[in-house]
Length: 277
Image (tube, rainbow, N blue to C red; front, side):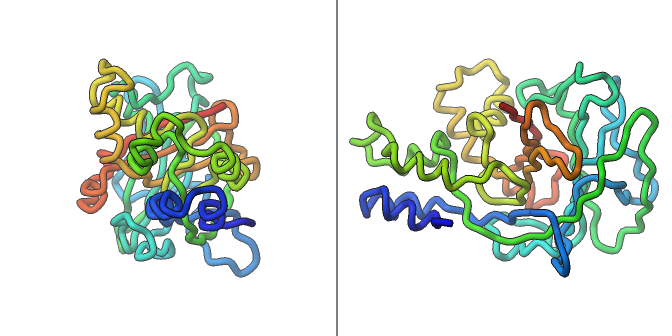
């Protein structure tokens, strides 16, 4: 497959290619493990929660479904540019509509719904117990995941892309053959830790920023772009046939967090969103 570096240097002027390449960020791509692959995490199955910690629930709605678990000690965190824990596990839960046939949903623009997504960090050495699925839920089939680190590119509408363009090129935007090559290069959102998010629609950072600002500001208010640049992707989990996961209409789940909150292990401040076709 043609690399992102080749795409930039083939379809962009040399100075603009270097500007764009400086925006690439390493992402830990998670794919179905086979053979002797190192297991970095898994989709579905049953979570091992700390002893004494209750299964996550959205008050007034019901228990969340266990989406995925990631072993931070296997994720090559030093190869990423976010302060991921060096060890321990990250457990991702989401209210997926099994309980209410999809009536309630999580939206970054509605803070009252944020409890419909939960991220649990389990430090290494913490006594844990595998939990049975609460009544009313079915566990997703377990799919082991392996990891590889690859460069990731920002969405063409991400605010950092606009800031990378020369001022005299803002009206014309990015060359069409360049954006077409990026589209052809993408194999879909996929499962990923760190790096740039691969949105199904518009930049997920914009969605989170708009919600954080209260949702009453205009989408083109400069404050939205400024706030969006303060958030980074922690994880994304795509629709997956092997795990029998379908997010909306072939969509993707995203968890975003501010880097300082990640460094401080304030996982309660992560915000989730879902995009679908």
